[in-house]
Image (cartoon, rainbow, N blue to C red; front, side, top):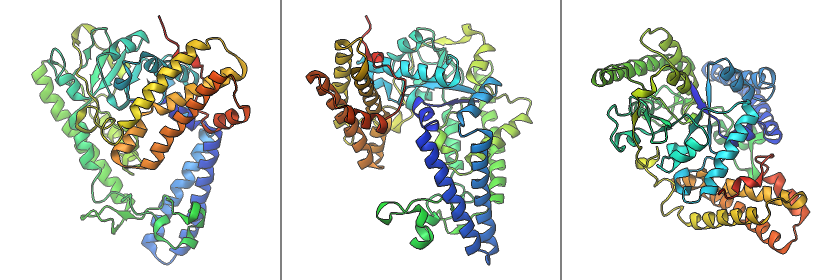
Length: 469
């Protein structure tokens, strides 16, 4: 199994402030669960459901503070060292890289911070690179090769419409002109997964007790101006009509998960058998999904993954392998040389998710800021002290504004005010530093405040934006 943990996520998972916030939230969940157990004492079905969620929160806290010592990256690293998991690198702030290939220093910074962060947390050089949003453009081939990545992944149509076209479709890896191995995502597996998540027995995510009980019962979860927030206690299943009006039954949901895992495997094996016959060889299925599909959007998702591996272990014809393990067992001469088509796994398969009327305004400001970042890196190549701190913070602000999350949120009309504020805040902070360096005066108090507020990549070196000859 392979997984991509972005440098941004790695930093967040080890940030003391966020860890403390998480523990405080967990404590609130436990206290609320105890109140709910008392409130529902006379309703056996509701009470057993409360107990189910309460026990999970308690167990989760025990694992987090005990087994993983408040650092779950240690768990990922442990399983990688045992050979059970392969952690892939990805760009520093999950930037949609095809947009920035005309500004090489932006792509360079994303790669270099990604590699240094990976080495810091996992103590080794990554073999694979996960392209954020599976965003591929032919120009990225040289970047992947220059940073010694052995493989990457693209969506299925990148291979189907490749030049020349992929003779084995997306059921077998290919090789780029510069020798990077490219795996194509199994489109059919993604379709099957999307259908499964809507089963009537699964938990309904849109009804949380934090929004249904009287305010005095959810006081710990009230935000500013008594705004409501989620408690994690959700008692309803999707139901046949999708309205979330049927009481959730965890046991039935778990049985459904096991059945769907078997059905998923059967469908995959059938397709692979057919593809293998057409290819005159063994076919491969790359099942790639967004991690928040498992747990956040699909509550039973983690149980599905477990059931999938348990069911697969019973079948002799099934093998689960991480990408590097698979490549070690293949003859490289069997990989077709081709250039994948420009693509992503966004809406309609190209780039409209990150560039349309809702978000196009940001790019002229972003590009101008990147050009200025390169400029001040050239102007101040060897500075130390306060100026170096300012330059490092400028680099952080640029990387933050390059994140693909903001344009995606604007496109989806989700938390648009927050996304716009994040873009404008980072651009404003960068401009303040740029102008301060020009006037040779930087407010230490202001800089310290910004360093604490946007403290990502504490060991960053602003010279990652330096122009290379």
